[in-house]
Image (cartoon, rainbow over all chains, first blue to last red; front, side, top):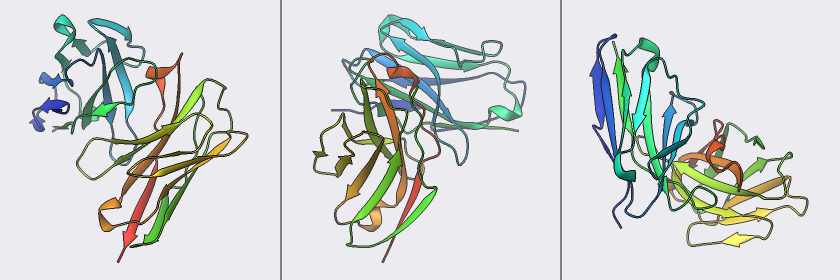
Length: 114
Length: 111
Protein backbone atom coordinates (compact mmCIF):
# COMPACT_ATOMS: atom_id res chain seq x y z
CA UNK A 1 0.00 0.00 0.00
CA UNK A 2 1.08 3.56 -0.60
CA UNK A 3 2.27 5.31 2.52
CA UNK A 4 1.42 8.70 3.94
CA UNK A 5 2.47 11.36 1.45
CA UNK A 6 3.52 14.82 2.53
CA UNK A 7 4.56 17.85 0.53
CA UNK A 8 6.63 19.84 0.21
CA UNK A 9 9.61 17.97 1.61
CA UNK A 10 11.45 21.17 2.48
CA UNK A 11 10.32 24.76 2.81
CA UNK A 12 12.32 27.90 3.56
CA UNK A 13 10.46 31.13 4.23
CA UNK A 14 11.08 34.47 5.86
CA UNK A 15 9.41 35.26 9.16
CA UNK A 16 5.94 36.76 8.95
CA UNK A 17 5.25 34.89 5.71
CA UNK A 18 2.48 32.27 5.46
CA UNK A 19 3.20 28.61 4.77
CA UNK A 20 1.09 25.51 4.17
CA UNK A 21 1.79 21.81 4.40
CA UNK A 22 -0.21 19.09 2.70
CA UNK A 23 -0.84 15.50 3.74
CA UNK A 24 -2.44 12.58 1.93
CA UNK A 25 -3.07 9.73 4.37
CA UNK A 26 -3.16 6.02 3.62
CA UNK A 27 -6.37 5.11 1.82
CA UNK A 28 -9.08 4.07 4.25
CA UNK A 29 -7.42 5.59 7.29
CA UNK A 30 -10.03 7.73 8.97
CA UNK A 31 -7.79 9.18 11.69
CA UNK A 32 -5.17 11.77 10.79
CA UNK A 33 -2.59 13.45 13.02
CA UNK A 34 -0.30 16.43 12.65
CA UNK A 35 2.86 16.45 14.77
CA UNK A 36 5.69 18.93 15.15
CA UNK A 37 9.19 17.68 15.82
CA UNK A 38 11.92 20.01 17.00
CA UNK A 39 15.54 19.06 16.48
CA UNK A 40 16.66 16.35 18.86
CA UNK A 41 13.20 15.85 20.34
CA UNK A 42 10.31 13.48 19.84
CA UNK A 43 7.19 14.40 17.89
CA UNK A 44 4.55 16.51 19.66
CA UNK A 45 0.91 16.22 18.70
CA UNK A 46 -0.68 19.36 17.27
CA UNK A 47 -4.07 18.13 16.12
CA UNK A 48 -5.97 14.90 15.53
CA UNK A 49 -8.84 14.36 13.12
CA UNK A 50 -11.37 11.58 13.06
CA UNK A 51 -12.77 11.77 9.53
CA UNK A 52 -13.30 15.50 8.96
CA UNK A 53 -13.75 16.42 12.62
CA UNK A 54 -10.91 17.85 14.69
CA UNK A 55 -11.32 15.89 17.92
CA UNK A 56 -8.18 17.09 19.69
CA UNK A 57 -6.58 20.44 18.88
CA UNK A 58 -5.59 21.41 22.39
CA UNK A 59 -1.90 21.67 21.47
CA UNK A 60 -2.43 23.69 18.30
CA UNK A 61 -1.36 27.37 18.68
CA UNK A 62 -4.58 28.73 17.30
CA UNK A 63 -3.44 32.33 16.99
CA UNK A 64 -1.28 31.44 14.00
CA UNK A 65 -1.89 27.79 13.14
CA UNK A 66 -4.90 26.39 11.37
CA UNK A 67 -5.74 23.02 9.87
CA UNK A 68 -8.43 21.49 7.78
CA UNK A 69 -9.32 18.08 6.48
CA UNK A 70 -11.70 18.33 3.59
CA UNK A 71 -13.99 15.35 2.98
CA UNK A 72 -12.12 13.41 5.62
CA UNK A 73 -9.18 12.57 3.36
CA UNK A 74 -6.37 15.05 2.60
CA UNK A 75 -5.35 17.61 5.17
CA UNK A 76 -3.61 20.97 5.16
CA UNK A 77 -1.77 22.62 8.04
CA UNK A 78 -1.17 26.34 7.76
CA UNK A 79 0.93 28.83 9.67
CA UNK A 80 0.28 32.53 9.28
CA UNK A 81 2.41 34.43 10.05
CA UNK A 82 5.42 32.19 10.61
CA UNK A 83 7.88 32.94 13.41
CA UNK A 84 11.50 31.90 13.82
CA UNK A 85 10.49 29.40 16.51
CA UNK A 86 8.27 27.55 14.07
CA UNK A 87 11.31 26.03 12.38
CA UNK A 88 10.81 22.29 12.80
CA UNK A 89 9.75 19.14 10.98
CA UNK A 90 5.99 18.84 10.57
CA UNK A 91 4.88 15.22 10.45
CA UNK A 92 1.57 13.81 9.34
CA UNK A 93 0.38 10.38 10.43
CA UNK A 94 -2.72 8.31 9.85
CA UNK A 95 -4.30 5.23 11.36
CA UNK A 96 -7.28 3.00 10.68
CA UNK A 97 -9.07 4.21 13.79
CA UNK A 98 -7.97 6.33 16.68
CA UNK A 99 -7.89 3.87 19.47
CA UNK A 100 -5.47 1.07 18.94
CA UNK A 101 -4.22 0.95 15.37
CA UNK A 102 -0.54 1.81 14.85
CA UNK A 103 0.27 5.21 13.43
CA UNK A 104 1.80 5.40 9.97
CA UNK A 105 3.91 8.49 9.46
CA UNK A 106 4.94 10.42 6.41
CA UNK A 107 8.49 11.68 6.01
CA UNK A 108 7.53 15.18 7.06
CA UNK A 109 8.09 18.72 5.86
CA UNK A 110 11.19 20.43 7.15
CA UNK A 111 10.38 24.11 7.68
CA UNK A 112 13.08 26.72 8.08
CA UNK A 113 12.02 30.23 9.01
CA UNK A 114 14.69 32.89 8.47
CA UNK B 1 -1.33 9.84 30.30
CA UNK B 2 1.30 7.34 31.24
CA UNK B 3 4.78 8.66 30.52
CA UNK B 4 7.79 6.64 29.50
CA UNK B 5 11.46 6.85 30.43
CA UNK B 6 14.21 5.64 28.11
CA UNK B 7 18.00 5.92 28.21
CA UNK B 8 19.15 8.67 25.84
CA UNK B 9 21.64 6.48 23.97
CA UNK B 10 22.93 2.93 23.57
CA UNK B 11 25.53 1.18 21.46
CA UNK B 12 25.35 -2.31 20.05
CA UNK B 13 27.77 -4.42 18.03
CA UNK B 14 26.62 -5.49 14.59
CA UNK B 15 25.15 -8.99 14.65
CA UNK B 16 24.48 -8.93 18.36
CA UNK B 17 21.11 -8.50 20.05
CA UNK B 18 20.09 -4.96 20.92
CA UNK B 19 18.00 -4.71 24.06
CA UNK B 20 16.28 -1.36 24.50
CA UNK B 21 14.60 -0.74 27.86
CA UNK B 22 11.60 1.43 28.64
CA UNK B 23 10.02 2.30 31.96
CA UNK B 24 6.30 3.05 32.10
CA UNK B 25 5.54 2.72 35.79
CA UNK B 26 2.27 4.69 35.60
CA UNK B 27 0.76 2.61 32.82
CA UNK B 28 -2.91 1.84 33.30
CA UNK B 29 -4.68 -1.41 32.63
CA UNK B 30 -6.06 -0.49 29.22
CA UNK B 31 -2.86 1.02 27.83
CA UNK B 32 -0.69 -0.73 25.29
CA UNK B 33 3.05 -0.29 24.86
CA UNK B 34 4.08 0.74 21.34
CA UNK B 35 7.55 1.00 19.84
CA UNK B 36 8.53 3.12 16.87
CA UNK B 37 11.87 3.98 15.37
CA UNK B 38 13.01 6.96 13.37
CA UNK B 39 15.87 6.89 10.94
CA UNK B 40 17.43 10.21 10.06
CA UNK B 41 15.28 12.38 7.78
CA UNK B 42 12.37 9.95 7.84
CA UNK B 43 9.15 9.77 9.80
CA UNK B 44 8.79 7.35 12.71
CA UNK B 45 8.16 3.74 11.69
CA UNK B 46 5.94 1.40 13.69
CA UNK B 47 7.76 -1.66 15.04
CA UNK B 48 5.57 -3.58 17.47
CA UNK B 49 3.06 -3.22 20.28
CA UNK B 50 1.70 -5.28 23.16
CA UNK B 51 -0.56 -5.22 26.18
CA UNK B 52 0.84 -7.77 28.64
CA UNK B 53 1.99 -10.80 26.69
CA UNK B 54 5.32 -10.93 24.94
CA UNK B 55 5.07 -10.24 21.23
CA UNK B 56 7.26 -11.06 18.25
CA UNK B 57 7.14 -10.05 14.62
CA UNK B 58 9.56 -9.98 11.73
CA UNK B 59 11.27 -6.88 13.05
CA UNK B 60 11.60 -7.37 16.78
CA UNK B 61 10.41 -8.92 20.02
CA UNK B 62 8.71 -7.10 22.85
CA UNK B 63 9.07 -8.32 26.41
CA UNK B 64 6.71 -6.76 28.97
CA UNK B 65 7.27 -7.39 32.67
CA UNK B 66 4.54 -9.08 34.65
CA UNK B 67 3.69 -5.88 36.51
CA UNK B 68 3.71 -4.04 33.14
CA UNK B 69 5.84 -1.25 34.56
CA UNK B 70 8.62 -1.76 32.08
CA UNK B 71 9.36 -3.38 28.76
CA UNK B 72 12.28 -4.27 26.51
CA UNK B 73 12.46 -4.13 22.76
CA UNK B 74 14.81 -6.76 21.36
CA UNK B 75 16.39 -6.58 17.93
CA UNK B 76 17.82 -10.10 17.72
CA UNK B 77 20.60 -9.51 15.20
CA UNK B 78 21.27 -5.79 14.90
CA UNK B 79 22.55 -4.44 11.60
CA UNK B 80 23.99 -1.05 10.72
CA UNK B 81 20.61 -0.14 9.25
CA UNK B 82 19.05 -0.46 12.71
CA UNK B 83 20.87 2.68 13.80
CA UNK B 84 18.00 5.02 14.66
CA UNK B 85 16.11 6.74 17.47
CA UNK B 86 13.73 4.29 19.17
CA UNK B 87 10.60 5.59 20.87
CA UNK B 88 8.54 3.76 23.44
CA UNK B 89 5.05 5.16 24.03
CA UNK B 90 1.94 4.04 25.86
CA UNK B 91 -1.41 4.39 24.23
CA UNK B 92 -4.84 3.44 25.45
CA UNK B 93 -8.40 3.36 24.30
CA UNK B 94 -9.19 6.71 25.85
CA UNK B 95 -6.01 8.62 25.09
CA UNK B 96 -5.03 7.27 21.72
CA UNK B 97 -4.25 10.67 20.30
CA UNK B 98 -2.35 12.03 23.25
CA UNK B 99 0.52 9.59 23.35
CA UNK B 100 3.71 11.37 24.31
CA UNK B 101 6.79 10.33 22.39
CA UNK B 102 9.51 11.65 24.65
CA UNK B 103 13.03 11.94 23.26
CA UNK B 104 13.65 8.23 22.72
CA UNK B 105 16.86 6.17 22.73
CA UNK B 106 19.45 6.74 20.04
CA UNK B 107 20.75 3.28 19.14
CA UNK B 108 24.08 3.17 17.34
CA UNK B 109 25.02 -0.15 15.80
CA UNK B 110 28.76 -0.40 15.32
CA UNK B 111 30.64 -2.69 12.95
